[in-house]
Length: 374
Image (cartoon, rainbow, N blue to C red; front, top):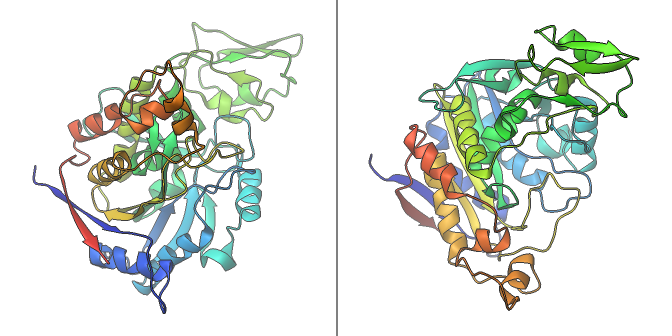
């Protein structure tokens, strides 16, 4: 496979211009105008940030991309799917409230916001994964798959489970329904926290395997009948249904790549990473620690694998920020130095598997040509 082009510009601007204009210029030079968007629905996938987190991308960047889409006659909407874990985005109502509190609304972004997997995180479609080895059919939010064109707008950062979060994570994990997220995180079957169960019986109505019964008004899951689809987790509003078996990081990384493949295959896609406020952990946290690396710049490409690889390489070339998780770890006298910023920040991660597997299944290539713009 030939090298893919990844376009880059830093955060320097002179008088009379601004970063939003620079982002739009980057996308135009990278070829976003070559996508036919006229009269078509365009999903712009991004992360609205957990309440209390301050590292997520500002809504101004989303508006810059939405405006480009509208210039091309497209019908843009911002989207993300509900979370599997308790927080401020586990169903569409609180997810929309969270987005609004964090500054995302029709005025600030110039387009509508649609939660991709619906009210309870169960509005999904099953998409066969091209070359999938671990996931044969990915459970993707329906609104995301209904779009004609897909754009990923990702905050590139560290991550406590996958090493880094870039385009592939924004797409693969972010576009999975609640059941899809469970499939990526776990290969087991759900169980019940009886102390949290209220006997509402919604999980039983969602179960397609007749695996859920009730004793003393508490749900019980028959593990022999259960197929592990996870729809009961998405249905429960009280976090009483959970999965006790979580996969190791390398398997998570590979499943996530396959989910990203399902989202992107067979339609026009464009990908943008902003390497700034590079926090050690995901924006899903209700807080963000100090950045582990300095702000680097904005990257864009049609190839999400090359894009993430270029961002990783740029990060590895930076000096750690003082008074950060990364620099604190490196200063420990007994620290095992990995000479890898992501592993030295979160030593249990397996980030390379994401890129290696994404390349293996045909999402793109890790070989790239970096085109730098002023």
